[in-house]
Image: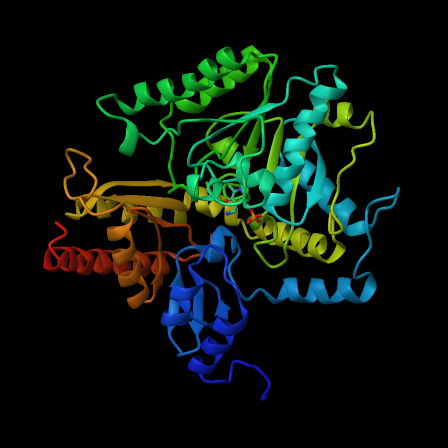
Length: 461
Ligand code: PMP
């Protein structure tokens, strides 16, 4: 058997992949027929595949490569840390410098009194921590029955049993016995699809008030926390109307409910501030972090926790933790990533320079015959595909059919743009240049033109 490497022919690598590798969120039998795309290297915002194509990564991997690919500083830090202390745990009254330094830096970056960090290996794990931490908080305070967590349909919080239960993805709930008990879902603030005749502002208020109705129905003495993404990512980059978050804040304040911001996508510059809850104007008690924390160079996540919750939890043994909580190599790499984001002014650039450039280019797509709304916040954006803009109508074909066609056209044009149903979404590395933004939007437009032609040819519109 020859050594498996980038030098093997694509077909042979695909056959081995199909034989032994089960892919996440994939119909593996279908992929075996088609053959997986093999990425061999990457630099900046550009991926190279095994056929030598150069592909513009409009999704920053899975929303995570904030500083872009190919930063050797992170490799150097990882190698140094592996030589010095490749692993030690933070259980049993022990700690180490990378965990201390990263926790301190996160406390500095996070707003208000979010001063304490519980580390995890991923966003899913961190949200599992949050479920247990929020419930334990009320239990220690003598209210064990205050354990229901409210979240939203079409939210995404991870794929473990706990975080998948928090999420509102019905296809995930259908497999493996989710959700766990005492999770309650309310509707999402997706005006384009669900706003009907209401203005976006009216609709934002109405959807926020569903939280208050749920609290009143369940009883405020039963509700521990509300968790949400500042902007839903995997749900289709759903940017809520401006009225939504202030009303959610008021409701949680009025009813003594913990607010948890899932910043796994929105954190670390994606929306033009360090955290998405800052851009959208609310004050969480706990923030979930992962992805951009290390720009995906190492698997690491965590929960940033406010003084009050940390002090209550600190009063008892919290029977929770992961082997890789605060992993020294991951923590050292994350710290270096935060240094680069800060010192190179990447977050500011998103807010003041490249973000506005992308906004102008992206919003220009709204004149395309297939595009209903073109929405953007910082460097995450979506377009809703529609056969009839004024009616905000869905296609007659099953949801996702048209989005999939468009996604395939993007791939053919060497652009990674994802589809969620019939919404197309991007979330490029934050270091994307203005010229690369122009290339991205040009390719998106070409792919839309080709999709439009294909829909006409196939009688889909
Ligand atoms: N929360 C949000 C908002 C996410 O987008 C994701 C991943 N897409 C997660 C949690 C889960 O993170 P992970 O895949 O690292 O477990």
